[in-house]
Image (cartoon, rainbow, N blue to C red; front, side, top):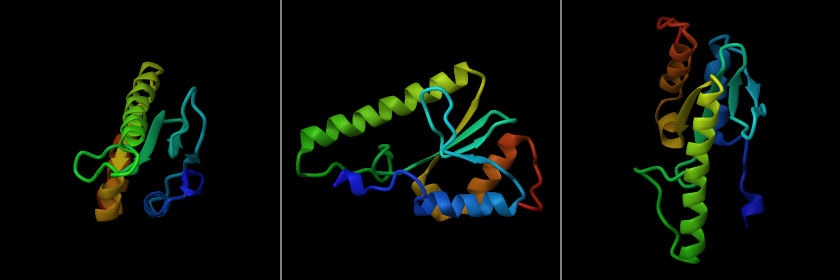
Amino acid sequence: MMSRIKGRDTGPELSLRRKVWALGLRYRLQYRIGPTRPDMVFVVAKLAVFVDGCFWHGCPLHSTMPKNNRDFWEQKLQRNRERDVENTQWLEAEGWRVLRLWEHEIEASPADCARRIVVMLGKVEESKA
């Protein structure tokens, strides 16, 4: 079953990428930085953007625990959250800035999420975003 789960090019990722591209910003996809591959990377600005699915990354608002194989899922999802923290800390220690966006944030307003990227890049062009 898990082999059928998309690890990239999810709906929220594509929605965010379209908004960011429309703003004229260019990025790398799944660009390896040490032990991690952020969903979007702005290499020159050293900004790593992750699109975190509410289920897989343990969103405090929307994540629910499956009833079947509960022990497996608790360990799996806990390890995902720990890995997110480890990767963020590693990137920051290497001088990268990290932006983690929840799936539900992008679904609610991809434009607002794109604006957050613009602000972090230091290109505060609110009229365009």
